Length: 144
Image 1 (cartoon, rainbow, N blue to C red):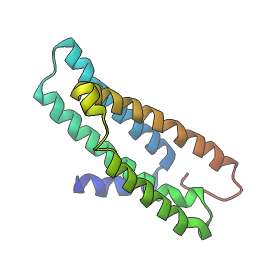
Image 2: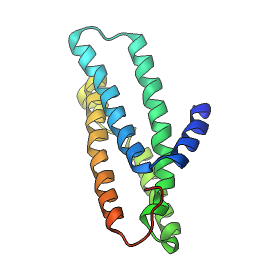
Image 3: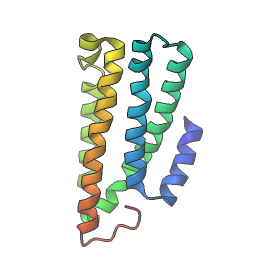
């Protein structure tokens, strides 16, 4: 993933960050929903699971790089420290609560992939809303 991190950093610096965030979320949703769909169809194979894990990992790298560098377009310079603190807090909470979620226990691995796919679709909406707010903001956002 290190190689993709370097490429992602270059792309995120050269492209608009919001479309990258939205595309990564929707891409991860589409990739993850293929697991329960293949399981229902009876064609789920290890090769597909490897491909899903690799592609979701690459999209996560792009999302994470864009996510961290999008903050300066959303807040004024004086609020960047507070914004970074809040991003770190929300990330820590997600890392603690996410793996312990009951989706695996309640829905099994196939259902868990469906739940995660739905979550990625849901998280794409606030990014789109934040962008509309950002466009209406009086602060310049060259990479928003």
